[in-house]
Image (cartoon, one colour):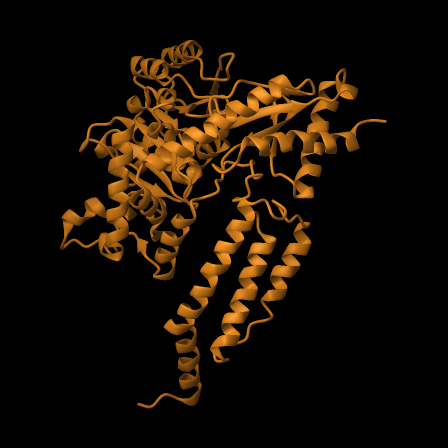
Length: 504
């Protein structure tokens, strides 16, 4: 049967969009453009953040949607339009490869990692069952084995998976903890519990941990925040008292969630002591090591995660301190069998009963996602290309810069570091003479206003936080190309913008 003219025209347009030659020509120009952009960013040519208010950016993004050429115009026109759109993306986007980007815990990723990710994106490698993504599955398994071994777990005894970000990773691990700690809860829910179960968390735990409690049906009021010591680390003595009291009341406990390291100031909990307490009270120990797990690569900093091997579950974000593109977060279980406790479901339309042995490798049985992108190609590629020493180097360099900035702040009369950093997260305040006697509220508002002026100028990108209820400035040195001279310029820029904000 011959195709109608409309269908024939549709097929022709589709074939033009899928043209390998269009991909080849556009790809060659794209790589040159990206390389030039990264070079300029690394040389601090231009602004870090090209600030525009949201409505203006949304209007610009919407305007491009009306400029499509259609797939049947000349290839050169399509390539030119493609490059124009990419230039818009680069011109309006955040420049994380600029060494003056020292803001959120999102890295200047190793560029080659992005190219490996691009292979997976262009060929649309996905996962759910092994035969949908055999190589993606193999890569994920190989990396789980390496990371679990770095933690110190026994090969063949542990398991894990990759998921889309630390928040989803925490939810997945805590769902597993809930199902193991509360017998029958997956099937019967929480309605039959004599007492409402609780989740005990480090007081500075990431908000995703408390959010998980709501999603898991525990309720935010059942999140109990364990006390901290004078370095904002989980205090084992206070934790011991809390767990003893809960056990005495026969209160069901889902887990204790510790940090390596906590988001506010990068504090690493004393995991061996915390693990002792959890073992004594027979409580699941979960460790959010999204940021700090990568210290496992560093001989200089590995001591920060001593005791991580005693956790029942660990979250570790490769898209933080392993410097690969987002999102690539690992959920790791010390006991291999626990990976099948997260979900207890059958899906015969998806999983093949003719090959039951392959279920061990089917990620859809163990993750919130069914179809899942091949998120680990970037890490696998960078590791296979450069070797693991690169990860140790990037941890060492950025952690060392955290100490460098701390000492500069401590030596400056108009700056106040608020802690001695254990990693590359540093929290501080700028206190000019005119604000030396200001109230905490005024001093805090000054920090927030100062940060806003700084980032809108495009000179640097840092973030703000509240510490003990007072506003402060927060830096995460997560570009390994940042140098000491950039930190000097940061202090000078803060002073300059601060003068414009000081009371007359």
